[in-house]
Image (tube, rainbow over all chains, first blue to last red; front, side, top):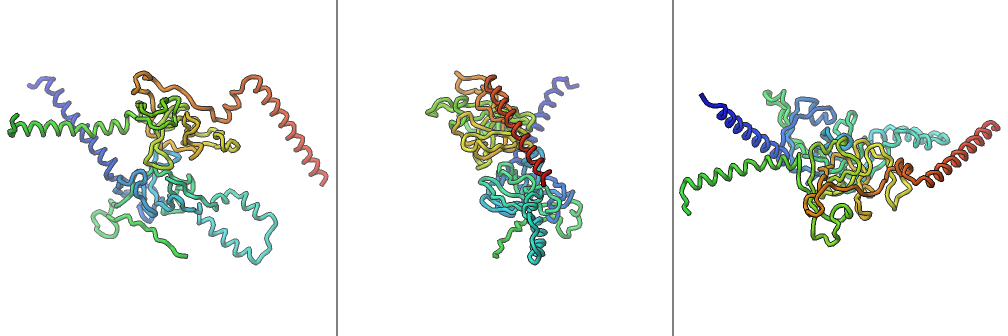
Amino acid sequence: MPSILYFAKEGGRVISYAVRAVAFFHMFSMNAFELSSTSGDSMLPTLHVSDDYAIVDKRHKYGRNVHMGDVIVARKPNSPESWVCKRITGMPGDIILIDPSRNTLKGLRDQVAENTTKIEGQEELERSNLNANFNNYVIVPEGHCWVTGDNLTDSIDSRTYSVLPMGLICGKLIRAWYVPRILSFKDQYFRQMDNTYCEENW
Amino acid sequence: MTFNFATIKYTLRQTAMFLSWVPVLYVINEHVTYVGIVEGSSMKPTLNPDSNGSKLDHVLLWKWGCKNINNLHLDDVIFLRSPINPETIYVKRIKAKQGDLVVPRYPDTRSRVLIPVNHLWVEGDNVHSIDSNTYGPVSSGLVLGKATYIIWPWKRFGPISGGGRECRKAYLERELPPEMAEVARMAKVEKKGKVEKVENKVEVGKKAD
């Protein structure tokens, strides 16, 4: 019968190997690639609400070589323990309209108002309106970027917490993998995250 | 020295054993503790006091839980990733935390800055440092670690001392010497009286209309 010392030695060996394996896996997932599940509906047409697994390319951490239109994973500036997945819609030096969707309604109202007399003090009223903050423009400073979710109606993003320091970016999404459709081999069970950015010439 | 099969096998085995511990060291350095080297003069009286820059201070960094704002305290020296250029790392001192109203340094003393939730106001002990007076409050997610001990020049081994200026508006008013505090109080009372008078006037005017 083996002694208690034998069990201690073998147990130590197992623990030692386990620690080294976990550490190696962690190092790999911090610096090369990571498979992580995504949840939430802020990126809805691109990523599903749940059961969607994404491959994150960690070589793009700290915003290394990221471009306009890339889907990135970053820490939330106003709660660093939570991670967000958003699309870059503004790079340093760009001038950003904080919320274009609010401006469309205002534009409609302006078109109607062209033929009518303006009420005195209307502009001041609009300025005092809380929503007027969203009609402002922001210049993205050096080392920051502007991120928004693809689902603008249900996304907490740069419109709320303003510009995102690139130091908080931890990687770029390159592939996504929708688990419930893994056996159907139909549309989008394993798909590439494309850069949807295209320049518009006005 | 002989090169036979057994020697090569033994060498390879030892190398593999050594290399297999590298990831463990990496994880400890990344998440628990690390030795940080301070470059530059932005923390001058406290760190790197020599002007020639030949001796660089080495400090012990504590990284565990340092992104949680509850573990970051006022007057802690922190290493943080620069918000302007994410590839550089700054060493600064926390001078205000979330919810504080801050009076910025010289060029812009008129304005007041309210620190948002989970953000910090960091300043260098040297007046000529590039700090929150330039780039504003920083998110605590950019913090890499807390400098706890100076470990390299043996002469200055020990915990890092306090320093920097007070920049929170509430405490700037509180820390006046007694005579000055009395003057400030009187001035405030006068101001308040004036405001009340003006309000009365407005009310009278309204009634007249």
